[in-house]
Length: 236
Image 1: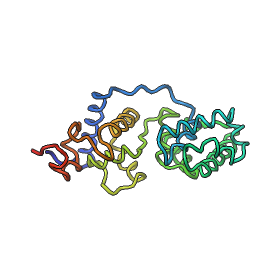
Image 2: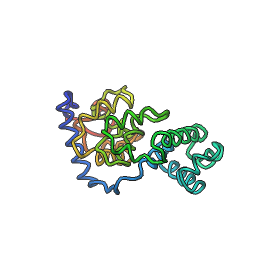
Image 3: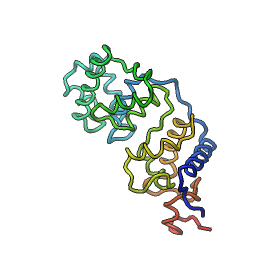
Image 4: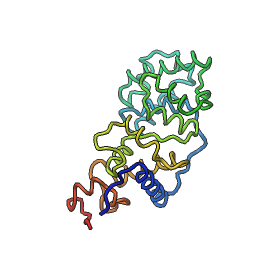
């Protein structure tokens, strides 16, 4: 087996190969034109500490209960929490959602985040990161899916794979991983790589019971090097 990449240049080259291999397996993901960035922000807040299914149910609950953002902003926090209960941490998320909507209206005069898409990426990130409950993953999801910017959000699946393939240290936190991975991402491939890595993490490079025998990248996998024959993949 080869050893995981060491230098930034080596890591960038390997990650480009990973991106191509994933597109060879899954294709280039179809992504509709950018969504409403405010909708992406609220949806991503709802996704925190839960799974995609419960996030979607919580967001559907909001849309059914409140006809528009104004109605949501004027609603009682307990009403909001009740509508999103399925997503967990409903009281905390209800407060954050109301705070965000209030901030959006105060900053731009209406309930729209469209102006954020006109800002330079770094400026937009600084603005979004100033909001309570918004970290790099959430901010980058807004810019990637809501504005169509070439930024790379790191979720739990991606963080796990990045550690196993040696792109980031084993004990690095998600926020630091964003910083370390950003310069390695092939230009124009951030969203495709993001979505394909998540799919790969769910199907193959799982947290529990990873399917190492069908790994696409055994030559770079730190996990395989450490586990050796226990993973079922021969070294040589």
